[in-house]
Length: 221
Length: 331
Ligand SMILES: Nc1ncnc2c1ncn2[C@@H]1O[C@H](COP(=O)(O)OP(=O)(O)O)[C@@H](O)[C@H]1O
Ligand SMILES: [Mg+2]
Image 1: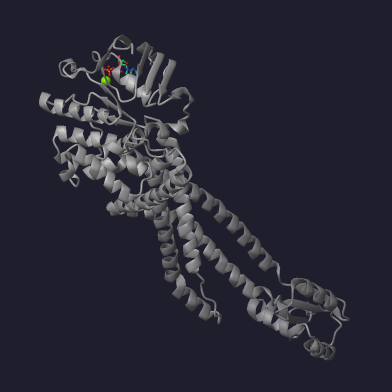
Image 2: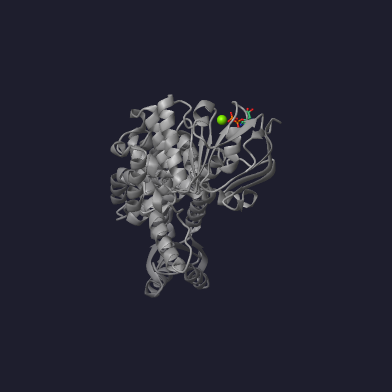
């Protein structure tokens, strides 16, 4: 579903964030991406999202070589992918419901369909009762779950998460990880960047480790 | 969520593909229309949410549009005034000095029968001299003249509906008559007025073009600020797969609302200005025994202003959006 072939990324300042990274992630796999801060985890996710282009090498997502996706094709590409961020990236001027509905509105769904799917997604993350609430009135863990609901509401093939438990206590973190495991169960390919080794080593999934931009473990399929 | 029926939208396979994708298209079209309605309504709400700031923008645009429109309405009215005056071009027929009163009277009578002439007013050289003496205050000097230097004059008013070529033909015909020395047509002032009007029209057009450019820039700047204020939202929308068109849409509507409001403001300003001068113009016209009254832009004119404002709003918003959206990461 996702494959990197000798991918390097050098930022304009001359810093090599990724060096010759190669790996393959199959459909309905859940893979953790770990490494110290600055190892290149976020950069790797950005390349999958086409928020950036690799300097060298080839990224393939859902059988599409990303070098062949033009700027106009980027929105369509991103609709195949749900993303969860450490800082939630919620919009604080609108309700939980409207936040989760955003990807569906963008994809042009009819409003009845939007309502049905948003409630299903909120139900899944256990926040159905809070659909009218504003995000600021929610706890950190609840905000993160709103972020997850927004990421999965469009039924993406791929779910990416960048430090989704970064600000949460261990219990809440474990709960969030269980949600991701549920999505893998139904055929979503999940890639989670996290430096919380204690948490992820308990979960028995494949772990890829980045060190100064090099993939030092977990790359070989 | 219904995770069991997991499937990405916009993908269909198999035999049912065609009809399914047709349903998909109509479904997408409905979603697209709904987003247009939503953007339009939300942008309008955002504009109305801050009435003071929005009012200021509307007024600035309104004044910028009202100025050239107001001037051109004024010019149209002056033009109409001029048009009311231009048909009876006055002609002065100067007779030769050897014509006596009897022949002059006969000529006056025959000219009055002429089917292209409305009226003839004969001023004898004696009457002309005494009038000149009275008006100029040179009575003493004139009395000391041995001979009256003035000729007899006939003031001829051609029929109102004569075209200017016909007036010229009439002048040539009259000039060829026996006893006529010279015929002078008093139209120079009218031509001067016409060219002055033409000049003013061009000036108004130029000022108008500059103000229109100004309106686009003002709107562009307003939209730029709106874009800055919604930066976070734009980033998120792009991350979850919003196309540029989707991101642009609410800002284009914002521009449209500012422009439409500005156009309406301009219409009201012009109407108010006309109402303000209507009474003095009417009393002035009454003094000149004219039934002239000021004609405004009318409902269609105001509607055109609103449409023009809306188009300028869209143009300004488009300018700002294409310039500034591409600078916001992720592209
Ligand atoms: N936009 C950028 N421009 C320049 N350097 C960057 C940029 N983003 C990240 N980097 C650098 O690339 C390296 C990898 O960063 P990142 O992928 O964010 O690491 P991680 O997410 O593992 O902490 C870091 O040294 C960081 O300073
Ligand atoms: Mg990071």
